[in-house]
Image (tube, rainbow, N blue to C red; front, side, top):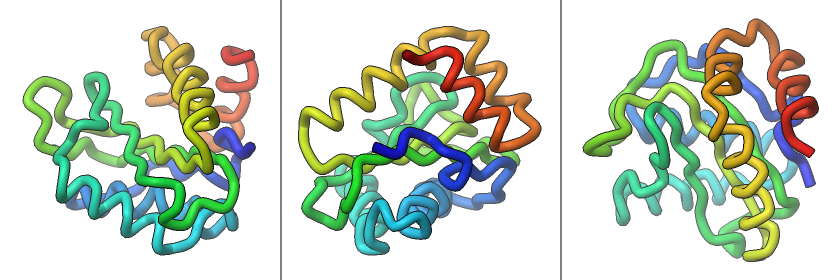
Length: 147
């Protein structure tokens, strides 16, 4: 499982739309070999069809799609946007932290969501993500805060 290693992190990416932000996170999964490029488009399609249901907390989005759409290995990527953008969520917009989840099974999906939830329930961790200077800072945060 690839849980936010340095090659799955992009800091201060520019995105003009929610779809751009989803694609930025998905492209990291594809570039690492954890998912096919088709998986990125499947996440965009899910957003178009279902709306911003995955904007789970203020400023935080966790886009994902069905594994059969091109996931090769369970993985999570992280993109911090250079400026927050609107996803269309009534209470949790705008978003600046995007975590793309790619899982091959429900069990992996739940395990990754649990790890993220533990970290993101701590306001200090969210603040640390927003001020991280390097991908290695983000890796260290998750290594230290998540067992």
